[in-house]
Image (cartoon, rainbow, N blue to C red; front, side):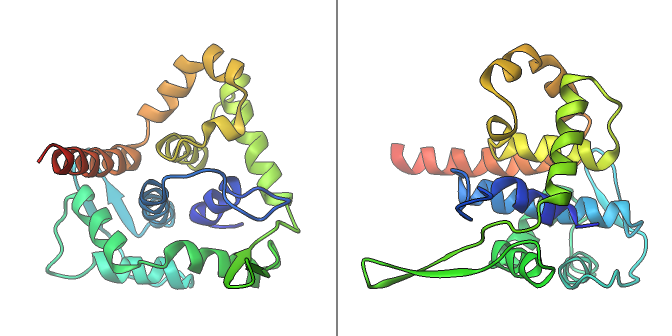
Length: 214
Protein backbone atom coordinates (compact mmCIF):
# COMPACT_ATOMS: atom_id res chain seq x y z
CA UNK A 1 0.00 0.00 0.00
CA UNK A 2 1.26 3.46 -0.90
CA UNK A 3 1.43 6.28 1.62
CA UNK A 4 -1.29 8.92 1.72
CA UNK A 5 1.16 11.48 0.37
CA UNK A 6 1.97 9.18 -2.57
CA UNK A 7 -1.76 8.66 -3.21
CA UNK A 8 -2.24 12.42 -3.23
CA UNK A 9 0.58 12.82 -5.78
CA UNK A 10 -1.04 10.21 -8.06
CA UNK A 11 -4.46 11.85 -7.81
CA UNK A 12 -2.92 15.19 -8.80
CA UNK A 13 -1.10 13.79 -11.85
CA UNK A 14 -2.52 13.49 -15.33
CA UNK A 15 -1.87 9.80 -15.95
CA UNK A 16 -1.02 10.17 -19.64
CA UNK A 17 0.96 13.42 -19.77
CA UNK A 18 2.69 12.93 -16.42
CA UNK A 19 2.13 16.57 -15.50
CA UNK A 20 0.19 17.97 -12.59
CA UNK A 21 -3.38 19.17 -12.74
CA UNK A 22 -3.46 22.93 -12.24
CA UNK A 23 -2.36 23.52 -8.67
CA UNK A 24 -1.38 26.27 -6.30
CA UNK A 25 2.04 24.91 -5.43
CA UNK A 26 2.14 26.06 -1.82
CA UNK A 27 -1.35 24.65 -1.11
CA UNK A 28 -0.34 21.31 -2.58
CA UNK A 29 2.95 21.18 -0.67
CA UNK A 30 1.18 21.94 2.61
CA UNK A 31 -1.41 19.26 1.84
CA UNK A 32 1.41 16.76 1.27
CA UNK A 33 2.80 17.58 4.72
CA UNK A 34 -0.69 17.04 6.13
CA UNK A 35 -0.78 13.64 4.42
CA UNK A 36 2.56 12.71 6.02
CA UNK A 37 1.16 13.61 9.43
CA UNK A 38 -1.92 11.44 8.90
CA UNK A 39 0.27 8.55 7.76
CA UNK A 40 2.14 8.86 11.06
CA UNK A 41 -1.16 8.95 12.96
CA UNK A 42 -2.45 5.84 11.17
CA UNK A 43 0.81 4.05 12.02
CA UNK A 44 0.43 4.94 15.69
CA UNK A 45 3.37 7.36 15.90
CA UNK A 46 1.38 10.51 16.69
CA UNK A 47 -2.00 11.51 18.10
CA UNK A 48 -3.93 14.64 17.17
CA UNK A 49 -6.68 16.65 18.85
CA UNK A 50 -8.42 19.84 17.73
CA UNK A 51 -5.35 22.01 18.38
CA UNK A 52 -2.28 19.95 19.13
CA UNK A 53 -0.19 17.03 17.93
CA UNK A 54 1.50 14.59 20.29
CA UNK A 55 4.30 12.14 19.47
CA UNK A 56 3.43 8.81 21.11
CA UNK A 57 6.17 6.66 19.55
CA UNK A 58 9.53 7.51 17.99
CA UNK A 59 9.94 4.06 16.45
CA UNK A 60 10.96 4.31 12.80
CA UNK A 61 8.41 3.37 10.15
CA UNK A 62 10.86 2.28 7.46
CA UNK A 63 9.67 5.05 5.13
CA UNK A 64 12.43 7.69 4.78
CA UNK A 65 10.08 10.68 4.43
CA UNK A 66 7.85 9.59 7.31
CA UNK A 67 10.87 8.96 9.52
CA UNK A 68 12.34 12.37 8.66
CA UNK A 69 8.99 13.99 9.49
CA UNK A 70 8.78 12.10 12.77
CA UNK A 71 12.31 13.19 13.66
CA UNK A 72 11.49 16.83 12.91
CA UNK A 73 8.36 16.93 15.06
CA UNK A 74 10.00 14.95 17.90
CA UNK A 75 12.54 17.71 18.57
CA UNK A 76 12.30 19.06 22.15
CA UNK A 77 12.20 22.60 20.73
CA UNK A 78 9.06 21.88 18.68
CA UNK A 79 5.68 23.34 19.51
CA UNK A 80 2.80 20.92 20.03
CA UNK A 81 0.50 23.11 17.94
CA UNK A 82 -0.46 21.21 14.78
CA UNK A 83 -0.46 24.31 12.58
CA UNK A 84 3.04 25.29 13.76
CA UNK A 85 4.35 21.77 13.15
CA UNK A 86 2.94 21.61 9.61
CA UNK A 87 4.60 24.94 8.87
CA UNK A 88 7.91 23.72 10.35
CA UNK A 89 7.96 20.51 8.29
CA UNK A 90 6.94 22.40 5.15
CA UNK A 91 9.97 24.68 5.59
CA UNK A 92 12.31 21.80 6.49
CA UNK A 93 11.51 19.58 3.46
CA UNK A 94 11.40 21.96 0.46
CA UNK A 95 11.69 19.18 -2.15
CA UNK A 96 8.85 17.05 -0.79
CA UNK A 97 6.92 16.73 -4.06
CA UNK A 98 10.03 15.66 -5.98
CA UNK A 99 10.97 13.16 -3.27
CA UNK A 100 7.53 11.55 -3.47
CA UNK A 101 7.72 11.39 -7.28
CA UNK A 102 11.09 9.65 -7.00
CA UNK A 103 9.59 7.19 -4.52
CA UNK A 104 6.77 6.37 -6.97
CA UNK A 105 9.33 6.01 -9.76
CA UNK A 106 11.40 3.58 -7.65
CA UNK A 107 8.25 1.51 -6.97
CA UNK A 108 7.41 1.25 -10.68
CA UNK A 109 4.22 3.31 -10.41
CA UNK A 110 5.36 6.14 -12.69
CA UNK A 111 8.05 6.48 -15.33
CA UNK A 112 10.37 9.44 -15.65
CA UNK A 113 10.71 11.31 -18.94
CA UNK A 114 13.15 14.15 -19.60
CA UNK A 115 12.37 16.70 -22.31
CA UNK A 116 13.79 19.95 -23.59
CA UNK A 117 11.57 23.03 -23.85
CA UNK A 118 12.67 25.48 -26.55
CA UNK A 119 15.91 23.44 -26.70
CA UNK A 120 17.02 25.19 -23.51
CA UNK A 121 15.10 24.11 -20.42
CA UNK A 122 14.87 20.61 -18.99
CA UNK A 123 11.34 19.45 -18.23
CA UNK A 124 10.57 16.24 -16.36
CA UNK A 125 7.29 14.36 -16.65
CA UNK A 126 5.99 11.36 -14.71
CA UNK A 127 3.38 9.40 -16.71
CA UNK A 128 1.60 6.74 -14.64
CA UNK A 129 2.40 3.19 -15.80
CA UNK A 130 0.74 1.24 -12.96
CA UNK A 131 -2.58 2.79 -11.93
CA UNK A 132 -3.93 -0.14 -9.88
CA UNK A 133 -3.80 1.62 -6.51
CA UNK A 134 -4.84 4.98 -7.97
CA UNK A 135 -7.99 3.45 -9.48
CA UNK A 136 -8.78 1.70 -6.21
CA UNK A 137 -8.41 4.98 -4.29
CA UNK A 138 -10.53 6.84 -6.85
CA UNK A 139 -13.25 4.20 -6.58
CA UNK A 140 -13.30 4.47 -2.78
CA UNK A 141 -13.40 8.27 -2.80
CA UNK A 142 -16.17 8.44 -5.38
CA UNK A 143 -18.30 5.82 -3.62
CA UNK A 144 -17.79 7.57 -0.26
CA UNK A 145 -19.38 10.67 -1.77
CA UNK A 146 -21.78 9.45 -4.46
CA UNK A 147 -23.05 6.27 -2.75
CA UNK A 148 -22.41 7.56 0.79
CA UNK A 149 -20.26 4.52 1.57
CA UNK A 150 -18.87 4.62 5.10
CA UNK A 151 -15.30 5.87 4.49
CA UNK A 152 -12.20 4.84 6.42
CA UNK A 153 -9.80 7.39 7.91
CA UNK A 154 -7.55 7.39 4.80
CA UNK A 155 -10.44 8.27 2.51
CA UNK A 156 -11.65 11.08 4.79
CA UNK A 157 -8.17 12.60 4.86
CA UNK A 158 -7.74 12.35 1.09
CA UNK A 159 -11.13 13.97 0.41
CA UNK A 160 -10.31 16.81 2.81
CA UNK A 161 -6.83 17.36 1.36
CA UNK A 162 -8.13 17.20 -2.21
CA UNK A 163 -10.43 20.04 -1.17
CA UNK A 164 -7.47 22.01 0.17
CA UNK A 165 -5.73 21.69 -3.23
CA UNK A 166 -8.86 22.38 -5.32
CA UNK A 167 -8.47 18.91 -6.81
CA UNK A 168 -11.99 17.64 -6.17
CA UNK A 169 -13.02 18.91 -9.61
CA UNK A 170 -10.51 16.47 -11.09
CA UNK A 171 -12.25 13.58 -9.31
CA UNK A 172 -15.89 14.66 -9.73
CA UNK A 173 -17.89 16.40 -12.42
CA UNK A 174 -19.26 19.86 -11.68
CA UNK A 175 -22.76 18.37 -11.48
CA UNK A 176 -21.60 15.75 -8.97
CA UNK A 177 -19.93 18.42 -6.85
CA UNK A 178 -23.08 20.55 -6.80
CA UNK A 179 -25.39 17.61 -6.08
CA UNK A 180 -23.26 16.14 -3.29
CA UNK A 181 -21.82 19.32 -1.80
CA UNK A 182 -23.28 18.68 1.68
CA UNK A 183 -21.81 15.18 1.79
CA UNK A 184 -18.39 16.46 0.72
CA UNK A 185 -18.45 19.22 3.33
CA UNK A 186 -19.44 16.71 6.02
CA UNK A 187 -16.52 14.44 5.15
CA UNK A 188 -14.09 17.36 4.98
CA UNK A 189 -15.19 18.55 8.42
CA UNK A 190 -14.20 15.19 9.95
CA UNK A 191 -10.46 15.68 9.31
CA UNK A 192 -8.47 17.75 11.82
CA UNK A 193 -5.26 17.92 9.76
CA UNK A 194 -6.88 19.68 6.80
CA UNK A 195 -8.24 22.35 9.18
CA UNK A 196 -4.67 23.15 10.25
CA UNK A 197 -3.49 23.21 6.61
CA UNK A 198 -6.33 25.55 5.65
CA UNK A 199 -5.44 27.86 8.54
CA UNK A 200 -1.87 28.25 7.22
CA UNK A 201 -3.13 28.87 3.68
CA UNK A 202 -5.52 31.55 4.96
CA UNK A 203 -2.65 33.23 6.83
CA UNK A 204 -0.50 33.22 3.67
CA UNK A 205 -3.33 34.66 1.60
CA UNK A 206 -3.82 37.43 4.16
CA UNK A 207 -0.09 38.26 4.08
CA UNK A 208 -0.12 38.43 0.28
CA UNK A 209 -3.23 40.61 0.29
CA UNK A 210 -1.76 42.97 2.90
CA UNK A 211 1.46 43.31 0.88
CA UNK A 212 -0.54 44.44 -2.14
CA UNK A 213 -2.48 46.93 -0.01
CA UNK A 214 0.77 48.28 1.47
